[in-house]
Amino acid sequence: MWYWVLAWILTILTVVGNGLVIYLIISNRRLQTTANWSVLSLAFADLFVGLTFFPLLFAFNIDNLQDAPISVDPFFLVSRTFLYFSATNLFVMILDRYMAIVHPLKYLSLVTTKVITLGVILAWISPMLLFSLPYALKVGSRGLLVARVGLLQLVPVLVFVYVTCRIFIIMREISKRTSRIFAQLAFNHAQISSNAVFYNGPESRAASKLTVAIVFFFIICYVAENYKCFCIVFGMCKTTATLEQVIDLLFVINSAANPIAYAFLKRDIKTVIRQMLARRKVHVSTANTHGTETSTSEPRTEKSFSSQSV
Image 1 (tube, one colour):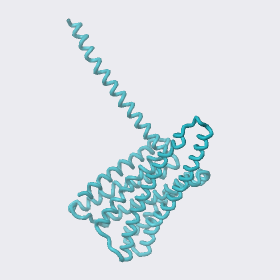
Image 2 (cartoon, helix red, strand yellow; image 1 turned 45 degrees about the horizontal axis):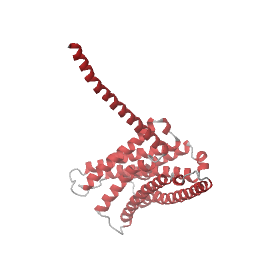
Image 3 (cartoon, one colour; image 1 turned 180 degrees about the vertical axis):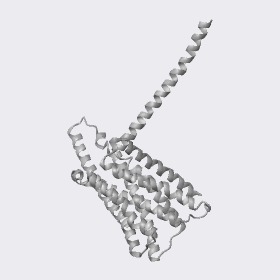
């Protein structure tokens, strides 16, 4: 039962995390920016992954939970459609972040609201044209399968590897340049503390490591899936039930981790979350203070009343 326990834990994390991201962006005007439309679209895709993947698989295997889960045609169609939605929307957002980091001066002029909207539309249409409609209509051919696997599974993996390496190199160069500048300032001005040189270092490194880790999960997930597709197409290897279960868990792990890596690390969303938590803390403190004042005033009232009666 370990498989289903992990499955439902990941389902809850995926739904709660992406649902919170959607709520924050929709309810807060400060977050309704061009850069966040791709985040919102990705959150919707990952939310649908959480709502459909393991719940549907559980429904189709409810009579045989002790055995390895069986993938039937309706589940395969729905689950893979939303997984491809997640992959293509992540692809759009990664390219958006790549342009913002690598070409910051050209970003505002090139990546406009129309460009992001077009990218999001293509991210939702392309999986339907390459997979959903042909699979539903029973249109199958090796060429279509190769095109689907290549465009929706292989190309994102290769692009993510290149983009991640490129961003990592640029962030490292910026970090070194910033450290040299602060070191020079610390040398020229003795009043500047040496701790200021690396003030933003740990936080930036932690954010970079977490982002790379999530991309690593995506790559590992689709490397395993591509291996399985290679086995099916060419018949040169065999897959096992354990490999199928690991692939299923990795799919949903990726969708559960996306809001942490690509939304909660964004400065604007993190600021809104901190403000919400601060307001909640103030509200709880006020309520506790009010309750304490009420409880301490009641005995005085009773004492006063008894004194008047005497």
